[in-house]
Length: 403
Image (cartoon, rainbow, N blue to C red; front, side, top):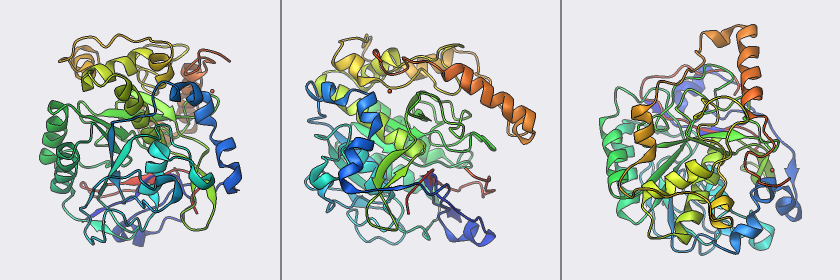
């Protein structure tokens, strides 16, 4: 038996019964926003200079698959934004039914139009392909490896150039033959896969999957001060980072909008960034899109690249779209696989070392040192306890907010 939960942060009281029951929400409740405040609170759009980017690209012609809890296309900002979809969950109700709300929120961060004072996505002209893999927060996913094989292959075979996965599994490795094959299939067919690194960086900091699979773009989270968040995982071979703290989205337990955060949100924003670039340069391959993203990412102020916390840096689609920077390079060479093959292993703080306060402080200091750069994505002057789970457990973790 394996669990599904979100890669975000919620207030939660951990109980043993939850381990066998399904999704475990993690985090702290954040203030609710009224509808007319939503755009003013979307700091990440301002930091990424979205208004300038949208003059060049809004994501037209690109389909992004959201592998999650479904996508409710009836919310105002997603009307007309979805295409097709499939429900692969254990208790199917339809890809457009989202009993949990997480998948819908990820879709709005990618493709929301802002209609009726709703969430404005970073790539409002893309089409979202909902691939539902989990239903309610009590649903259990059995035998996830073949399910994720089907989900990734479905996304690729139905035209998704970008696949966004806001979930992690700390124990899939060793029972992942089909999932690994599906990742390889997606890359060979020309798609890009983005997956959250996980939100246990301030605790166990375990290696999470699918983010750690070769070729998957593992995404870490930064806050509005352009610093990696203390909970953003560094053990999952981070490739890129994106805004992932204090991101407004629809509350899942009440009406209105709540601040949320996690590598879920960062993954959605990184996926939208890829869609914007690909829309402007449809002739580029997945390798070239990824290469320019890595090349133009805002680098850490100090330390080597890739950083264990930020990877190759914070995504900056504006550098490609507005400033014309970034070398796409060879079409048939995956820059992430090539770099991973040639690079020395990056040091990763161990879970044991983080058990002591002094070791934890040292890790926090290193994160502060590496990420304190005022130009990480701007060229001008923008977890709770660890849960022990079985080897095949899947998690989607929301970090903050959402009630």
